[in-house]
Amino acid sequence: MEIRMKRNDVFFLLICLGLGVLAELSFFHGRIGVSYLVFITGFYAVLFGKYRLSFNNRRIGLLLMIGIWMLAGTYAFYDNVLFRNLNVLLIPVLVFFHIVLITSSNNINWSKPSFVVFLFEKLEQGLRYSSRFCKISFRKVFKNMNDQTAQTIKRVFVGLLIGIPLLMVITGLLMSADSVFQDLVLRLPEFVLELNFLEGAFRSILVVLFTLFFFGIFQVLQVRTKPKDSFGPIKEKSIRRWDSITAVTILILLNAVYVLFAVIQFKYFFNDGLQSGFTYAEYARRGFFELIFVTLINWSILISFLKLVQDDRRSMKITLKVMYSLLVAVSGVMLTSAYQRLSLYEAAYGFTLDRVLAHAFMIFLMVIFAYTFIRVLLERLSILHFYLIVGLVFYTGLNVISLEKIVVNNNLERYEETGKIDIYYLSHLSYAGIDGLMDLYEADPDYPELRQLLVKHHQRLSNEMNNSWQSFNLMKQKVTDRLEKLDLSHE
Image 1 (spheres, helix red, strand yellow):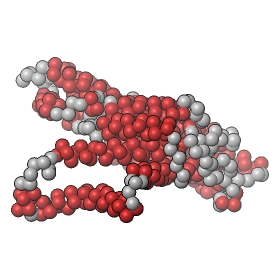
Image 2: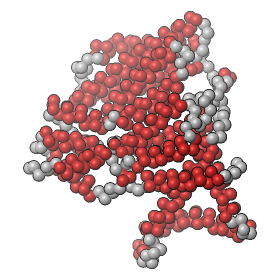
Image 3: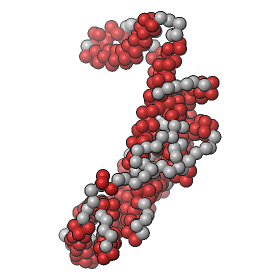
Image 4: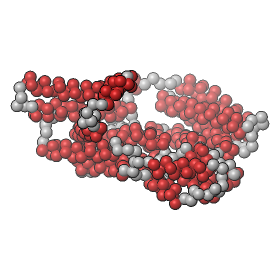
């Protein structure tokens, strides 16, 4: 890869250096909070400044950008542990997907697997650009030296990069293995083991790596090469088709069983009562997981047949559509039944994040099946485009509606009706759980062990040392202020 550095490129390298500093400040100074939103703002400011809004694929690009900003904003407004950990990986993937898409040709097909290959190619190009840039820069810095000296310095530098981290790991292991060696190392002059020096060196290396990564990626985005097989249809010979007669046979067998099952079970499918001989837990668990699993199997079969079964005969097309429609209908019955079984279980045992997520996932499947039914009738519709868009909207929605707050509110409502609530489960949630415990305390300060839990949370939040701007979280601030004002002296 040939690199020709211009004056604008040098200036842009300095901008990427600032972005690298911002990345290090945002992600390596305690718990991530509002800093994620700050970094995303800086990142897109650089992107828009470099390309001056000359982007392609604007509709899907706008949807992706809104989703990215909303997901980044959840670090500042909510504190769901599950989504916090998932978004650490998902947001960078979405950002890279987004910037490659909007800087590529308008006729690129982003819903095909070949686009994933294209993404990896772009990532490889960016890394190779950064590597090549480092080599050229090294040569220019040492151009007045003879080759032997330059090569020696280069090898020493590589040795230090590899040897210092390795030395630190090995020294730590040896210190753990022998107390005498540990004492000897700890007695070394303080300036050798100055933690601030080591921390500063580590942070400087991170800034350099971020800078080179951003610089390399931004520099190759404007190279709009076409990914393989992404602009045209996949060759027919590369796909093995299902025989239509075989597909109809399978669908008839499955639908016959599903219809029989629905007819037999219909008397208590949508009944609020229990099946005789079962407890709430047995009834819900016995039916819920099996129905969800069967529904997923049906969805997989339906998608496979829609993609791989082709028959131009009119009678066969009508037969397939009838079978597909019946499969969607019985799958909808199973989803509705599973949804109500889980609701019955929640009414008896309370609400948890897992159960609410299961409800949300079933709603998502219902939307997917509804669109798939439309696709059965209108063959020109694209399935994968819709699935990807709805998946992004669904996941972003789960992040921004504060599922933990929904869990807390439902449990408080259930407490008002039944007098039952699991305060220890709410205590193990994030700040929304603590907020709910304070609502319960204000309504019933004599609830057993509630005051002790709130006192522990108050002490924990008071003892937390990390109050940096990077870790600012609106929900945490609200709960902390409310705990400070709450009267916990009640006996």
